[in-house]
Image 1 (tube, rainbow, N blue to C red):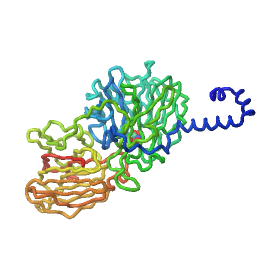
Image 2: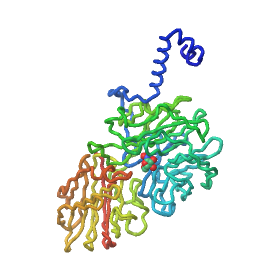
Image 3: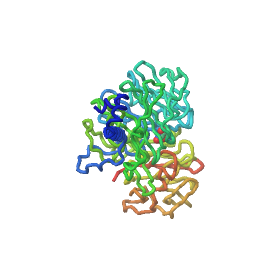
Image 4: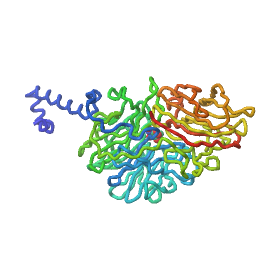
Length: 546
Ligand code: 6LW
């Protein structure tokens, strides 16, 4: 009845005059209906008795800008990695919840013949080949690499003539392949060579949020859907979507945009903030899911986050011919209570690294590809030797550093170091690092004696704690994170750990140090301006979340 009224102008006019109450009713219905498609910021509080089926983030720690693809019932996910090498981790999952790293897309020095700084990637699978397309921001721009096996090897970079960041690849069912970037310029591409086959044409203007970026194109029910991130990768982050029957547009915005955000009442106070930059996948049981990043704020108000942007997962309902609705009201809770794929857990990374393998585990990174002989693993002895180069940590290049992401707000990291500096410029120890600023517990020498201290390097400002004279032999170094604080301590000869310094954690937060990375904990050595002579030898490294 109502539909008849709405679709016939004549009937509507006719009845308008005769039945003003009916018209009012129609208006109320239309109003209510239009409210329904919007994410509801006043949605009911979650049922606290419902069974938690999984928790977010599904990949904790600095794993931002997630992109996902499916091959039958196997899922592959990649993240951006900035200056760290190997770059762009590839994770595998059977359930979208438990992820196991199988390799890296950027794993060989020659793949990119210059400085590495990788922004948001997209992973796609097409006719037996995996494609990972991304931007190397500080050198040459947009490129893709390919692999038959997602674990690698991946090809050398194929550079493409597209400006801006966050390229996406879309394989249409008519055999054509398209690339689109954060400028929302689309071009057809020859996927064998990387050459553009068409002009670059702007096809969408976004919905008006700041920093529009992260486009992905999907095809469903005769529509091309263009999804993006807007608002910037901080508190105002959001996901928006538009659609068109033609890939070149015009695109019509979803009236319910943004489809995911925490910059509203529904997101206020949620432990995960800054949600945005997403990719959507249809699972092998036909359910729809979104991978999206967000950060866990750990240091009070205004929010500061330490661990970087982390990969989260939320269900999507996407009715035929309709718009995707993300987790009901566009939020990303920590505790999820929705039905999932059958869950298949993966093995946890062991707490101790013994350095008794030829290569470091996938969780370990360098800064830029290592070049010389300063970082040496000895699997027979089970040691890692770091000889300080002239580079200080934070300077451009490949310093003597290995590190892994902090994956827990509360953690403890401990190592054993054997180090007798040959000169007073040499130092080595354990480090917390974010975007060039770092807090270290370090061994150094003066007047033929060995000392330990905590050094806090924030930009150009250096603070050094009181120096503690060491007795001969190895030294155990520890950093503990409590959330708001880092505690540095040391022990010698199994005599128990003594606290050297406590530091407000927010001084290494992303908000404080800038750029887009999260915190690493690692091992380092430096000759502070000239190459060191003595290596620092690390026996083991323990990392435990608490
Ligand atoms: C990335 C962009 C973004 O390329 O931040 O949050 C940029 N989204 O899409 C760096 O990660």
